[in-house]
Image: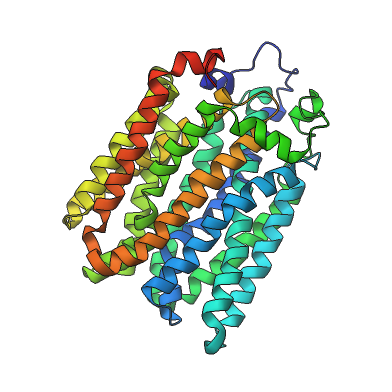
Length: 421
């Protein structure tokens, strides 16, 4: 089997013919939509904890509000993947999910005026909104991967536009929060969710999904049987464990890094710049790391990401000075970016043809959802007990992910040959 990134970077021999003039046009449209989507998460991840705290939530309440939709993705992720399989075009379920997020985030702003019901309202509405937005990502990834192979453009360039937009949101909101308060974060989330809904209709192409064109999803098997087919593949399940542990190690960072930095005397705009620096590392890896990705391959790349996570969280546990924080934030390009890309690539290698969309959705639901949710719930108690030193637990979680990644590396030839699933 040829390396995945060769398939992404150049058109396979058996792919349908590409229409040359449309290639940059499709790349730009996909990149713009990634930018819209990630501009919203650029507000959610760093600044939603501050908005919740400003509206009377305790550390444990914040942890639960942030964690419940992540835990729920253990169910909503596979169900949304099965539901999305019913649509001939990826853009239709994407638009529906973005609309649901817009309405839920808007209702959160209204619920802030009812103190007696705030926690229950925030728990429910944030769960709906965040679930809608995050379940768009695997559908968009699967769509863009298919288009990139057929139309001969680099998936990494489209995805890097999302990282750049995340940085832009971090920086802008850091200054906005300092001048007009935390409500700017919620307004930004509402606006970007609405723009994503509109963009799904007018930016994303109306192409019929490639797996439907090729007849790969035409089998009469019901959704749960398709899910069972994936979960019977041992390599895929271990991949979920590896990527899940490595991404869940970011949960403490997502939930409490901004609060920790503010307690250390850093201003909101500096916190925004620190977040932006982390995503800048991710952007650099996606934009300029193609040669490294090809040289290492996905199996080794996953191990490199695991090592970066162990180093990053171990050092962040001991209150590094601001100068060191900038350097540690750049490791996000490996602790998150390398793990994310390796996970996408290995899903492609380890699932049967026609199961890529569902495989990516489940990977996102568990690796980027349920396990991060468990880590976030634990983070509330860890933060109250250990504060800054709570990052030690994230380093241990990265170590567990490294063990699972090592298992995959040792068995990589048997797994891709289909002799050990």
